[in-house]
Length: 306
Image (cartoon, rainbow, N blue to C red; front, side, top):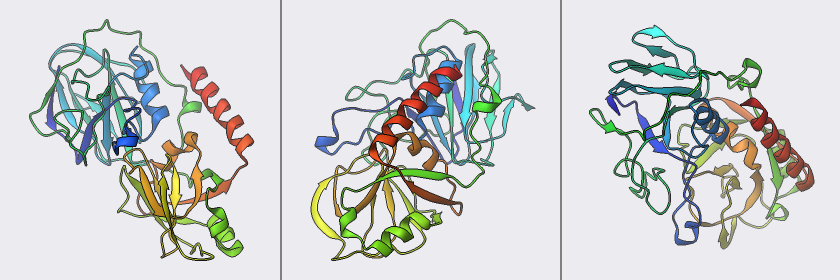
C-alpha cells in the first residue's frame, strides 16, 4: 500500500486500456507512452498490463506503507528516495516508511511508476484505466488527491534490473513523427500536403490525453473541411477549417466530421505524447508496408530491452 502525500497536477491509474467499448463512445484510455509503461512493469516483474501510475508534468510524492519495488520510466522527472537522488529506468526496492518524490519534467511530459504486483483498484469494463472525462475506472474515476491510499497486489520482490542507457529515448530532441497519409488526403491541396510534411509544428498547451493540438504551416483543403462523420482511429489527424492539425489520442472520441490528413503510426504515439507545449515536431509520411515493418521492428526492440 502507498499513501499519496502530494498528487501532482494530474496523476492517474492506468493499465493497457479498455478494449471493445469505443463503439459505445468509451475510449480505450491507458498510457500515452505505451513503451515506457511496459518497461516500468517489466522492471518490477509485472505482466505488461498491470496497473501503475501515469504522472503528467510534475510527479507525485508518496509514502510506502508496506515493502515493495517500484520503477519510474518515461519523462525525465527528478526522482528522490527519502530526499536522496535515485535512478529512473531501474528497479528500486523500498521499505516501509520510504518517501518517493518525482519533480517537474525536464524533458517529456509523462512519467510512469510501476509497483511490484500492480495497483489494486476495481476493474471497470475490463480495465483499471482512468477515463477522466467519463469519471470511469482508476480510483473513483479521477486523478489522485492528497491523502489517497492505493493498495497493491501481493508480489515477491523482483530482481534489481535497469534499462540500458542506449534504450532510453531522448525526449529533449525535436521528434520526427511517422504517419500514413489518409484516409481523406485527397481533400487537401498538394501545397497543403507539402506544408504538413515540411512543418515544423509547435505543440500547444491545450493538448491533453484526448488530442494533441499543434500550430504551424496551414494545411489547405480543396473543398471544405467537413465530411460525413466517420470513425476515429488512434492517431487520426483531423484538420478543421483553420488548417491546423489535431492528433486524436487514447481518450479520443469515437467519430468525427473533420477531414483527416493522416494517421500517426501506433509506435510513434508515445513519442508524440511526450512532446512538451512549445516544443516542435515534424511529420514524415511512410507507406503502409513500411509502417508494418517499422511496427515489427519496434515490437522486437521492446522485447530485446528487457
